[in-house]
Length: 394
View 1 (cartoon, rainbow, N blue to C red):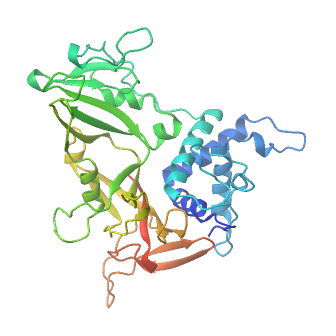
View 2: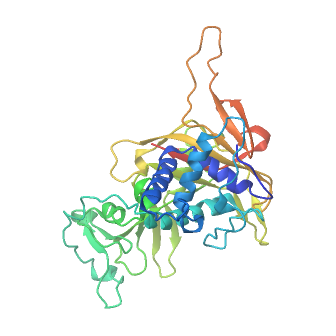
View 3: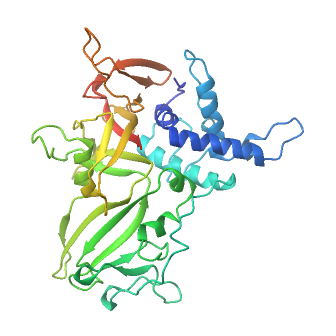
């Protein structure tokens, strides 16, 4: 377990999820090793903590976590005590006041990304840059993304015949006909190593494009937010699965453009990340401006298949294993309590002689207290736990 002081359960919950997600934990440890190799030691043979990048500090903490006794709880990383770390977006990381775990996770990952540069961890390069072709300017009606010098930026036309698409690679520049690779080649270290997912947002009949022309914006994502009120596609009336929620999040929608155009929009995954972080949208704002929690149940399973219909050009769906789940207990984002379910891709064992076949277990990490629970089809149902952040890996 992890020791919680004051209101740091959101920190403990997120760290439990990250330390039990092998690709992320391994990258943090690699940052620690790289930092030690690159740092200049002081006279007593120790590196001043203040000069150690955040990713390296977390990597050292990961090693201490796994080296600790199975009984004793480990303290939070030193960087999260006394306000030593300030994250962007106004999110605190000192546990003085309760924070939203989703906002904390996103801010933490951005801060880790920035610190990885300091220890020399770089994004993996792709072959797309070496094989790139000169981009083709879009139709005149679809132009408009310009640099300070007035030249068109990052647009290219792909496809054949009537199915041509006008593609903007979100400032990353054009890399032949592979816009996803162009974006992936420019991702920061953490995103490039384990979170290298891209979304292709398709908008048709938008202002600035010719009628019938589809503008495609390719952009990277760290987490993907999905609605908890999605319908179950295979069993109407039952709670949705995570795949149902993903389908609803990327579904086609139509809005009035205000100029006589019916704007249609949908999204597809361009490239699938090694680690897929799904955030279940639990908070809504009423007409009166009050924030309320949506306690809709979502069916979780140890494995997830992202339907191939949601992946651009895919011949098959993408398979993932559930590693950890951060759950929220309570009614408000600024209060309540966070716990983490550690699944690590656990699957139901085959029935043993005289057994029920449901002997597999998962761990529930509630700050310093960790207990085992039987794996059931309805994960995260103890004490009305609401699954909030889901970490999957391939």
